[in-house]
Image 1: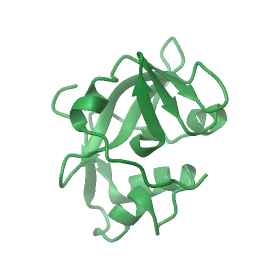
Image 2: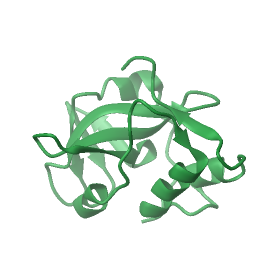
Image 3: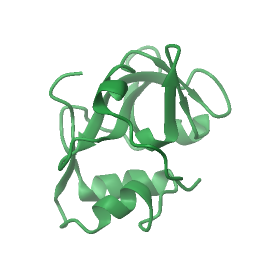
Length: 135
C-alpha cells in the first residue's frame, strides 16, 4: 500500500499515544505503542515503535503518517500481517538511512514519496531518525 500525504503529526500528539493499543485496518489487537522516532533534522515524528505480543514480543516500526489516534487507540492504515512482518527496531538506537528505506519498502512507500523521498537523498549511513529523549 502506497503512503498518501497526511497532515504532519506533532511530537506532543504522538507522545500522547504511548501505551495505547493499535488497530490495523483489518482487525483489532495489533500491538501497543511504546514510543516513536523523530526526524534527525527537525524532530517531526516519523515512526511509531509498536510492541507485538503480550509477553516478550518484539518492537517494530510503523509509519506515523499511516496512523490516526483518539479515544485511547491508534488506527493504522495497514493490515495486521503487514505490521507483524515489519522490520524490528531498537528504540534506544537511531535509525540510519538504509534501515528507514528498508522499513519504507516493507510498507510500500516508494523512494519518490513520503518518508522514503525525505531520506533517499541523504548520505549513505546517515542517521535519519532519532528516538525521543523522553516519551
